[in-house]
Every structure is written in structure tokens, then in C-alpha cells.
Image 1 (cartoon, one colour):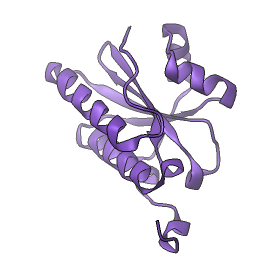
Image 2 (cartoon, rainbow, N blue to C red; image 1 turned 180 degrees about the vertical axis):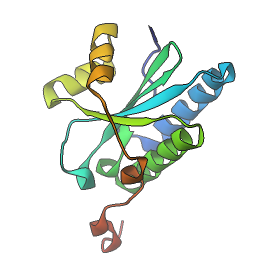
Image 3 (cartoon, rainbow, N blue to C red; image 1 turned 90 degrees about the vertical axis):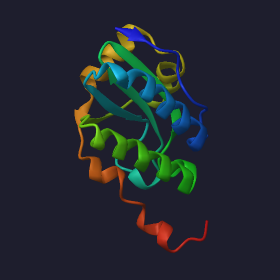
Amino acid sequence: MQIADPLGVPGAPHETLNAVMAHLEQHRAGGAAGQLILVTDRQGDRGHAGYAAVLIAGPVVTVAAQAFGPRFGPAGMEALEQLVRWAQAHEWPVRETVLNVSDFTRVIDEPETAEIRRLMAASNPSDPGIYLVWPAAWKEEAW
């Protein structure tokens, strides 16, 4: 397993998504099957969740900064939606795992092979549709 340097800027959805998409275009040329693992430090609170991403394309594993999801406002939701739709379009399964807060930053910012293997093993299949639904409360708020 080859772990690439983490991509993106924590809390910066557009910059992180752009870095991820550029990286995926480079590594997709080999046609390797892949998977997207969304990693969060919250369980049962999707309306406020923030996600980092672990992208697995063949032997290459890439970690993207925590910049996706409603915790980062509309830009975070847009970035999450685009990332999940990309995975669906390329027939990558979407998985999710929850890390405790004390491990989250360390694992995402400084990924080590053993920790990434544990994260992959602990991930569960997820319905991509749950990441495409914006929080209901946002319909009433003006961002």
C-alpha cells in the first residue's frame, strides 16, 4: 500500500475538492478500481457532520483533509455532493467510518499504513444518497 501525501486544506471545501479531483484524474489513467471512504468524528448527527476522505485507487491510498459536509456550510455540502457523485459515476463503492475525536486529526493529518488499514477494515458500506441530501434546516436559513 502506497499512501500519498494528504491533499487539501482543512475547512476549505473548494480547494480540497479541486486537489482531490486533480489527483483522481492522474491516478485514474491506470483504470484501477477504487473506493471512497468518508471519515467523520460524529455519529448520528449528519446535519452537522464534517468529513475527510480516504480514496483508494489500486495500491494508491490518498487522504483528503476534513473539508466536506455540512459542518463547512453550503460549500462543504457542494464539495461532498460532487465527490460522492464522482464516485458513483466511476462505480466506486462509498463507505463510511467514524473515528473518535482524539484520533481523527492525527490519522487524517499524518496517515500511517497500519492506521489506514484499520480505518479501511472498520469502514462500513454506505448508501451514497445520504450524502446528497442537504440538511432540512438549511431550507429556512439564509447563508
